[in-house]
Image (cartoon, rainbow, N blue to C red; front, side):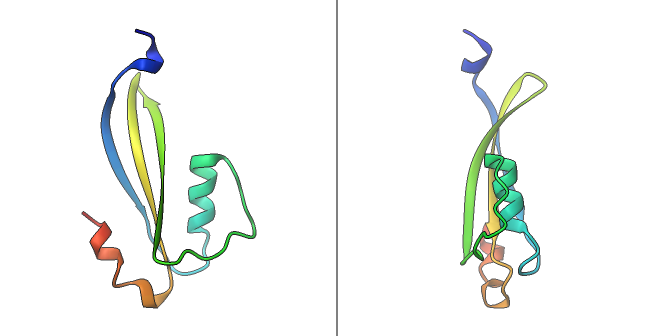
Length: 82
């Protein structure tokens, strides 16, 4: 078994929260896809991406959630905190 076939040790959930139009979605894209999109449209509700990392020779799966910053979506955020 090579290192790429090692079992995922854990899955972690990361939530990106903040005010509207501060770059949360751009941060998510940069981290997960190594892309910086200056024209990224505002998130409606929530979005997420998955990224696998190797930390201390252990594979970790991150689900990174991007929440909408607009006031009208603030009631959605607590549902994703679990």
